[in-house]
Length: 204
Ligand SMILES: [Zn+2]
Image (cartoon, rainbow, N blue to C red; front, side, top):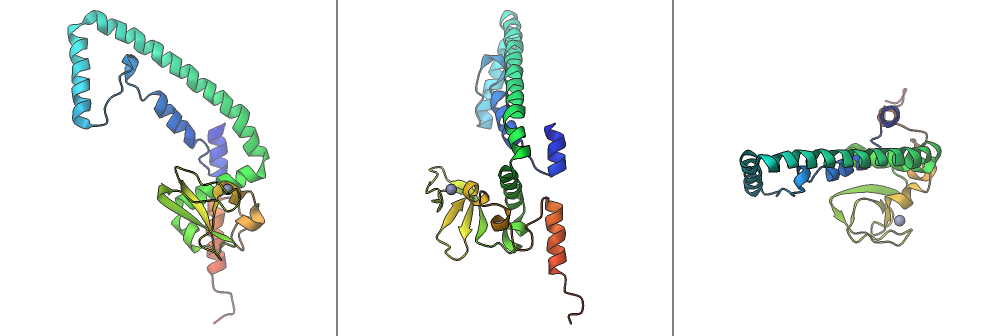
């Protein structure tokens, strides 16, 4: 269902799914050995495991059993996550225009430089940081200690910022650039930009 919705809206709604999935499966097999991120150390750990498998058949047999148990447990967790997602987020997304606007905007400005830099934003312009940067939100007053990748900078007062959540709450009329208030998809957005930038017929 989510794939259909994503295709229809052009949004990647389940970003968090990837991180949850990778977290669930990041532990190596049933041994619950966290492999090192250092390639040399990782190689040593894998060699040690392979050696034990070859030289200790009983341990290897138990390992296969543990690994299967581990796989099943994680499959159950993923399935719980999926049903929770379908029960809570999807209905909210499909019925709440503010959530839809927030998701759409976030995807557009995070992915496309031209959306951030070339559109006639009204009150704030989007700023995307490579490294999360702490900025105090002028609306909710919160400064996220670990920083944010995306904030909205007030155009008239560049030392003021809004978090994405507060910015998107203001609704389409305020949030979307001038002339783009009815746009719902990135293709439409690009087409409108082209249309608005075309010289008016009759002009020199
Ligand atoms: Zn805020």
